[in-house]
Amino acid sequence: SVVKEIDSINQRELELGGSGSWHDEYKDSAYIFVGGLPYGLTEGDLITIFSQYGEIMDVNMPRDKDTGKTRGFGFVMYEDQRSTVLAVDNLNGGKILDRTIRVDHVKNYKQAKVKGEDGEYREREEQSLNAKPELIQGAYAFRIFVFLCSHQVHGFPLDHVSEDGGINI
Image 1 (spheres, rainbow, N blue to C red):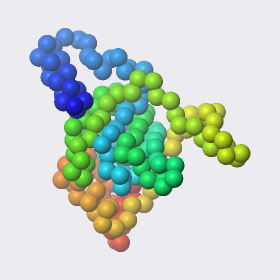
Image 2: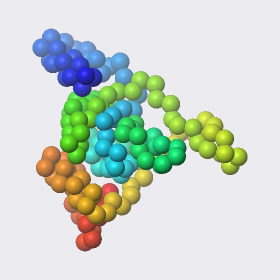
Image 3: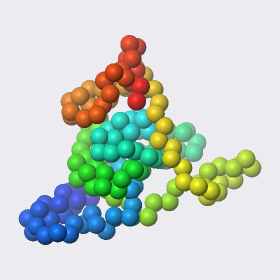
């Protein structure tokens, strides 16, 4: 699997030493790919999990056009490209709600098209920075909270847990 390949590359790099890194190939991109996500995860959930490695500027979770449900993968853009290295090295192969995730660099990310007033999809005129927090409620929010606490996710704002069980990310 790709997760094992990335771990193997990292291990060989450690054994060989040297000054270069396979991450250097992606030094011009601040985007990462995240695959294997539970279908119920939201953009806010990704922000919560991945923001421990840097400031998130953009999140794109493609959705099914008919149902609006997420498709199990997404893209995250960091403010600083060096955060991508930390996220790839630390979260690739990790588990979210019992699903193993794949986290990898993206060399040439192209933002999703937007739907115009006429219903046609077209290229964006300027880059979207659509990382927008949202309120997660109920039992699902509690499972995410337990995940974050059990994995000692640093930077999780515990003061944002509301009385009704929601997590205000």
